[in-house]
Length: 289
Length: 268
Image 1 (tube, rainbow over the protein chains, first blue to last red):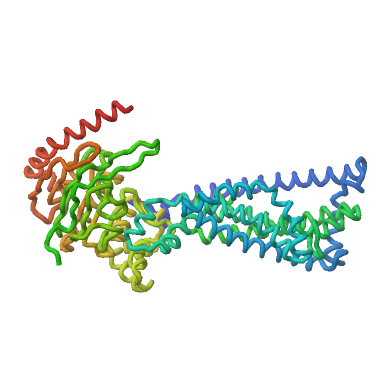
Image 2 (image 1 turned 90 degrees about the vertical axis):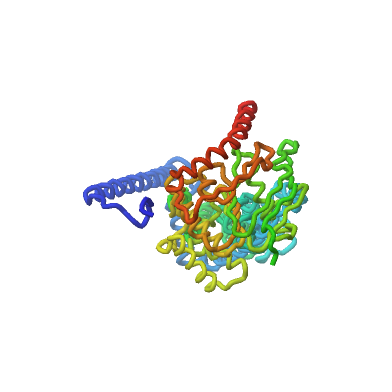
């Protein structure tokens, strides 16, 4: 039992070596961040300059105008009412579409992944459905479900479902046969095998897809709103377009981007929690990408 | 209570359909029996179909022809009281050591608390008490084997099937695990079928060594090992009795190993 290395036992490392390593890591972080800041400054500065002296700001806008628009939205309000009601509407559509789509994707993906007959039967239909340009369905859903929330939820759902479905399917197929046999010999029923072996081992696949899936849910909600809506960020963007208000389009994009990043952070935290059994090195790298 | 053999294979044959459409016969006309409390080792050249023998007994694979009996009953599905230790450790990476060991009782309907209580006893028996809360990736190969052993034994099987369980371990750890297995097995009166390609291991552990032919596998000959118990595998290896048994069985095994080797040379 002595020849075992465990993460809990750390060797005594000279203090000087430790502080040296810490300083090197800090310096590197500093370098990375300063270059990032410089890049953004150069980009925004050149845009501002170009729009002031050479190109027409009516079409291309400029950072100061976009900023002014954002400030205006958050302090005074938008043409479609308070910015927060619009954000709430879009987020509600995206989250509901995401939840239903992810749930349906996981359930069907795992089911088909575990049943060769079912997956053989469904394979051509699923391939065909996946080949349909799904974003166009948003137009159809507006006709079906009207200008209200349902049509956007449906668009978000359809985008999320396929992203999650394929990963859940793959994850359920790649379960170690040994683990399943072992569980069966230990006395597990088919349902227990599904819940205690198949689902946990498909989890890393499923979680990987959820990252991009929330992005898809937002896209679905916003595109749905652009096509036709009574409220929401997509409506703000389409109204700005109608009024040749270029800064408004940019401002809408920025708000949506921030929302997507926030959701990403929440999902990463969830992933870390659910996958705490995995070796740390592997999933830290995964989270970085 | 039946007094006959606890495991019996009668002319059992198993064929698999190959990936290219051909049919591969893994075992052919296999006949053997194991008494209650008996420790049987099955040796044969690598890849000859020894593992298939175990899947027939465990009910994971039905025989293509012939019959497999456990306690006199034909095997349909997985029989009661079977424990199976696989070659690759089949521990669940998302469960802690304790919960891995508790999985068996949980599957059989014990409450979480009861199952953990039972598991804790076995985690201690295999010497992992301090690591009960660790995840498998934090353990060494030998420790993961201990987890798998405890997870198998916690169900108190009366039949223990072992498929080269220690082959991936280094020599010292392997000897340690062999002793551990003998210690935990003694007094349980469980019948053991231990598949290995290591003749040393087979003789050190077993009461009876069955030599299999090169593929398709069938029983070539059976040898009784009359070495006293309790045994310490490292020490028993030095005794002249061990060496004479070894020579005798090796004579029989060598032909099959040569045959398998020739075939792999021709194939490659």
